[in-house]
Amino acid sequence: MARIVHATRAHSAMPMKSSTPLGAALAYLGVDGAIPLFHGSQGCTSFALVLMVRHFKESIPLQTTAMNEVSTILGGADHVEEAILNLKNRVKPRLIGIASTALTETRGEDMAGDLRLIKERRREEIGDTRIVYASTPDFDGAIEDGWSRAVSALIDGLVAPRNPRLVTLRQINILTGVHQTPGDIDEIRDIVEAFGLKPIIVPDISGSLDGHVPETWVGTSLGGAKVEDIERMGRSMHTIAIGEHMRGPARKLEERTGVDFTLFPSLTGLEANDRLMVLLSSLSGKSVPTRLKRRRSQLVDAMMDCHFYFGGKKVAIGADPDLLCALAGVFTGLGAELVAAVSTTGNSPLLAGLPCAEVEIGDIQSLEDRAAAGGAELLVTNAHGRMSADKLGIPLWRVGFPIFDRLGSAHRVSVGYVGTRDLLFEIANVFIGAMHAHRPEDFLPEPLLTTTTDAILGGHGHARAPAQAH
Image (cartoon, rainbow, N blue to C red; front, side, top):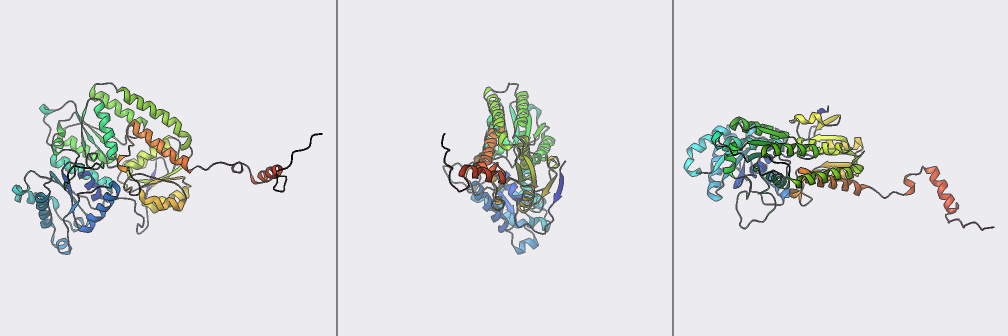
């Protein structure tokens, strides 16, 4: 049972976490034709925009209400109304997803009430554009919390109540977590469709942030879950939620529609994917497809190959709670030791179950200090950890958000049998790359090494001549 501790420093010079509104923006971008709108200053939006552009290497349609000193004091409802009408006229989005920031939350604006009045007053101008709002102050939580609250807002604002006569028996809902990449979501879709089921995936950033080149430029997200599909999530036979931070949205969807849900803390690893196969087989009435059975066999073989390189290794991990827990299970399951665990927020109950003595809610500096104290041989965190890894003299394996100094992060797959297999190989290769070529002196104590060298070189630095035969 891990003890949760909090960093006691007065400031964070090396932050690890990304903000709550940034997480909400990412979730909104998983809806086709959507545009996220930050209710705050231009600086709040610019910082999040830079991080997302650097991570995905794509243009990000992120807008702001551009609060200034006067509107911060007098209230920003007029700015929200003006922003909604401007976006409607200029880019004609299917969805405007509003996320609050610390600036407006600290002032205490009644954004939900203001938005209700704006919708009533501007009904004709807004037309069929859907508008949802999530409360996401920067000072409360991290990227997981923002993602979760935005998904709950989508369910509240878009999903129609359940009608038993309209239930579609082959349709299931997939609520993805913020730790799933576009590549992960594509893999999940393929697995579900292999059982003959039709998934409605929300949010679905595999369509909007997968790095494709569109035929024309548009000012909204291009791809993702359709608004019409989200509206009919209540017709599904079951919901699968991935990550503990998706429990709230899954429960909200169940309360609204009556659709039962199953939560998977992670879809990385053999046991988690075995559970997924059993569930999908039960829902579809079909046996597990042959190709998935073969992929399972490949994963088992990969685990046997990789455990030689994982065994006994000391690892330090810093990530958001669900990603941290998933990775901890991967490493310790193959014999590695978790010597340092640092998370961005303590909102997840899963942290207490990590296989280590303590979990610190801190930053990259916290991770660096604990990794040094524990003798870590591998640092696992986002790209902000690169300087700490250099200082410690150990490899850095980049995970999570943001990764701005490597290409292809959006296409990395770590779910399913094949994703877990490739993940193990990737980590094992990092361990192999950090190994040095062994020489005899690596295994001999110093006195014996000197004696042996003298015997070979004759004590003069020269090879001794062979004795004459008598």
